[in-house]
Amino acid sequence: MPRVIVIGAGAAGSTAAIFAARGGAETVLLDGGVDGGRKILISGGGRCNILPMVVDESRYVTDSSPNVLRKMLRAWPVLEQRAFFEDDLGIPLAEEHESNKLFPVSNKARDVRDGLLTAAKSAGVRVLHDHRVVAITQTAGAWAVTLANGETLSCDRLIVASGGLSVPATGSDGAGLSMLEGLGYELNPRYAALTPITAAPSAYTELSGLSLTVTITAKSAERTAKATGGFLFTHRGYSGPSVLNVSHVVVRARAEGSSALLTVQWTALLDADWEVRLKPQGVRTVSGAVRAELPDRLAAVLIAAAGVDPARLLSELRREERLRLIETLVRGDLPWNGDEGYKKAEVTGGGVALSEVQPRTMESRRHPGLFLCGEVLDAFGPIGGYNFLWAWSTGRAAGLGAAAPI
Image (cartoon, rainbow, N blue to C red):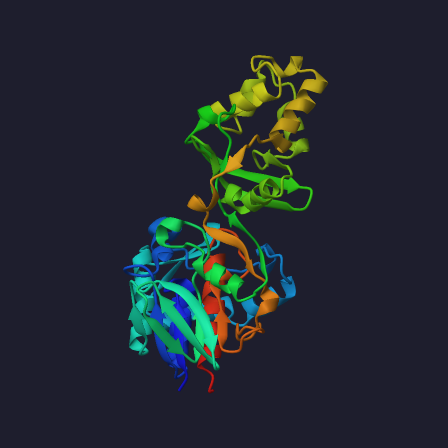
């Protein structure tokens, strides 16, 4: 019976511990916090978006091989993961079709966190809170884990599921990544992902609190990302799923000392659609035509940005003014000057290159007996349960791999 230690009682670590113990391993789950799974508790506004209903693998972002990433995802299909939560853990899920999301029927993230830890303990896992790991070393084929209190624990197999750097208030301090880097692992550049973008002050600051659905494109010399979804003006800039899903392009451009352009299609209407709506219609004004499709305050700001008189009759609108206005409405520049970084990032981009682990088991290619899963690996997905899916999938693979007979 292999002795397994799992570092981190988050989504990936809890899952890894469950499957390691069920696979016959003597399993210990270590967590630096007082209760574990802090990110699960705050996810989805406290509701926990467990999974997407349908998975689009192309929406994951990695600097590693997309082919390897797909292999890892397909090892545990989303329908099987859903069955795990509903049939195994007893957490019924509700479908939110308009957003392609699955939530617990209770709408309580705590049910998910507690369900995972309960399942781990039922499988025989020894869960130890307030056990912060400060070092990992390999000696004579075994692993030694040093705790902050000076205590050392040993095991045959070690699973690192310590997370990344996002939302440090939950205990994510990047210590696991630093330890792995110290062991010689190739780490792709780390960066805040799924984080709000800042733009203060700007012409849009007065719109704080206003929300709508848009299509936003972020483009730099190296990368392009496009997303359709909710958009929120904040007192510091912009947030909402559409913004978060393209924010990594902005964050990485800043880190690399280059620039990135944000453009927004403010409605579902394209050039030809706006041409129809801006045709002369009696005594209708430019303001009236645009306000028919957009919130009044935003319409006023966009018309001003296009340099058009809002009181001008559509019949008096010059061709160059109409084209300028359409350009603003369909491909309007969105000013920005920064981002909220790891403090508000939902995940950490980058991390250990996927080439460093075996896709089927998550076992290290460098150090037999060491397994990696979850956010320490170089991959993340969009808002909508994709990152939990990654955590559940890689966590299960690591747990099963670590439980294999010695």
